[in-house]
Image (cartoon, rainbow, N blue to C red; front, side, top):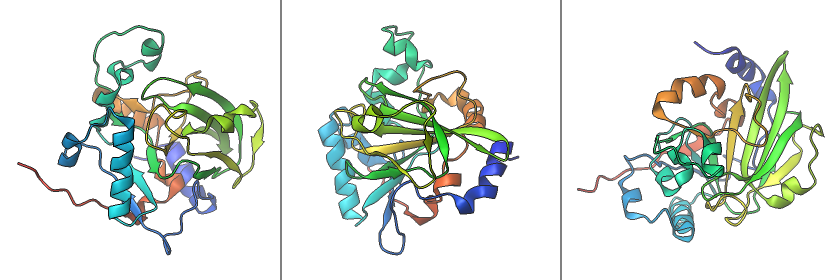
Length: 251
């Protein structure tokens, strides 16, 4: 059964503006798979950001795609690259604690992969809720969270891995209009040491968090977080254009 927020997003879907410039009539969109079923990942050094970036760029070139996409509720293997995901509470790692491996691996947003500097736009008008530079290996890096209201329902959108310049002049409470440019894909030095991409996530209740919200959860927490973080494609409306990868089993 759909949540109230999901119903509101579906109702208003025709009016959402694109988050990135993508014309399906002129460009291809490649669907990345970062689960254990992608045997190619076992051969890649994902700890090396430069190597990881070359893997992303090579796949986009092979498939003649300007952008890549995917990841919602995907149980990913790539989070083993950072101790940040060894705890159910990301703040515990940032505060120097390490309660042991809890295996956060389920992705709660959609990633759009592409060149650093790719422009990011606001799909629906809202105010700046918070922003931060979450500067840890594997973290969001520069992060923006907006608050919106549709038909009395309040929700939030999170934009992770953007440029530091994009948060330098932001102010809490500032209104951002639908279709307004808000950010750019950041480079690895400012985006948590990832290949350039945007993590886009929809969040109902922020649970008093500021400038940050978990983008990855454990398998046991999946149902709870899925209820609070519905499919971002209800806003993006891009997954229908994604080319599915052809996976080859390597014995």
